Image (cartoon, rainbow, N blue to C red):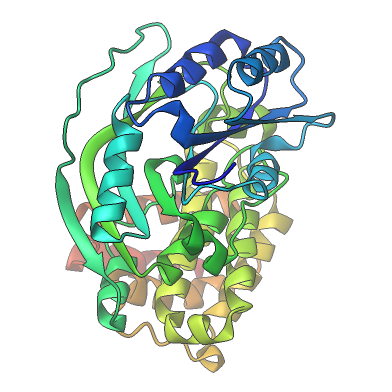
Length: 374
């Protein structure tokens, strides 16, 4: 294929009930399916998924690449395989039980071309499987903000802002950006594979636009590879910590970028590697083993050590205070993991409700925790 405008990557696993609707949403794109490259990866499905893929390939042989995996590699690896076949100027992701808004590819492509954008972040419309959805008309994009990352300060503010999220399919990527970052999805997990792919894009993109339109329809169904179902069914809350550590190790490979944005990277890592994992353990009642907690504790102490030179200048003030207290707590090796996760959750819920800042009430509670664990 040549002159492909957008490559669409769709990993598929046992979704015969939904895949036809997903593919119809591509055929309805006002950009024209002839301008798309559809990369379908059948991840060892045991139902009729491969037959649906094969039928689609017969209807659109020029636009389709169909890959049939004999072994279930899970969605991170499936997307990484698909990325090797990308020929489009831009890349978009879609889960096999979701759908695109029919004007979305055209609108995203035109905005990226008009503003020379590397990255566009947009919203989604989530719906319950039993309720269905109606394709809402979107005639133009509502731009919330466009960022130019030619200076360090703008990128730093963006990295520390609420705009940061790592849902991969709520973004539109220029292919050259993906090539610059060299990022891949975390493999071997049913959840949490996205951050390792998405966060590095923020460090390499020249610019980014944020639009308010809901351009993907996200199906909420029982048994899908959501965080709740995957964690509850597999008792693998530690997948989050492992994926975040893999992300940090990858970022350290690019020494110049890592040193330039070290504070921002460690800030992100701390919240997602440590706090988020503790929060997930409580929320889904999948309490980690002490050995798993001790590994997290050791990693955090190493990354936050004074010798590591991370001073958190201009970082989230909640992180600065919380990390100072954390150092006092994490040196304890006989900590009650479940009790500590509970403390972390309560404290950080209060911090986040207070806009990310530590007021006197939160400070008093944190100091009380430090005292109890001393």
